[in-house]
Length: 254
Image (tube, rainbow, N blue to C red):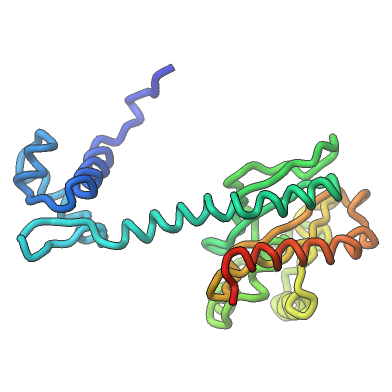
């Protein structure tokens, strides 16, 4: 089945093709780009100027345009996401085999937690999420595990910009209470979502640090509160901390 071309944005398609040509050839003049694209010089100049304004291309000493390191930075971020999934899988698998619950790997972006990878529980009653799903950071174990270890200025920005919406009676919406919760997370090394996002769901999570000791990701174990009791969470904490620590070591934490 072919894609419906009515949804293609022609200008975006041309811009990306020009960027691909620049990466392929290393450098191109406006005239050379126009010839390769089969378009006029003025049109190619507008696309290249836009890419230049966005920081993706620059003019070199040969009076031609070449890609900047911004493209490499984007590619590195994408590659790192795939790499962390590969590295994390064995640790996630061990947690999954032992506890038979859903194991999550996520990262923090734009005040939210984004699910990067998961291993589903085989139980009928389980946490249901999809890769790429977003969730509030303030009421999830993944989120609190990361927030607690953010640099002070990043946490301050988060607290100023986020809206603490009450999702149920367990959701922490008071900032002082939330800061006290993060202090407890820093002290323990792990975070607990005690039915704060969803009644009937409990999670325990721990941060994964990169080579700069930055909380780049977090691991969590999620399950129904009927199975994931506080007593069970107490047993889980050692394993989630160990898995997160080993994963941090694999990422080169000093």
